[in-house]
Length: 101
Image (spheres, one colour):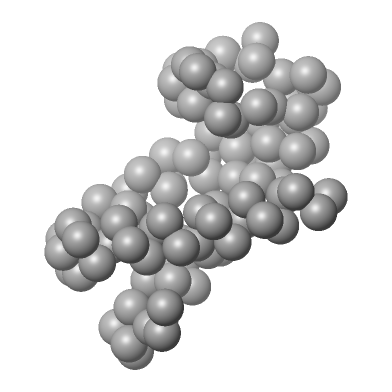
């Protein structure tokens, strides 16, 4: 997927937020892909952590909230189809990155 200049800005923002989410989740040993885990983090429930790190958990929660805000803005600016395609591409890149660590 080749980004237009407009999409490139969103790619960078979304990629930054998702990278931070992955980094903080790794520190806290939070399995974001497990059912109900994202909701628990958003509700400030750190029982989903395999490793207690209050600062990293706080950053994870804030990054998740920011991620939802960025996604909504991308949907507004790019349209739902383009925004979702962009998010899916970035998510796939991150998934591959996580597999190698």
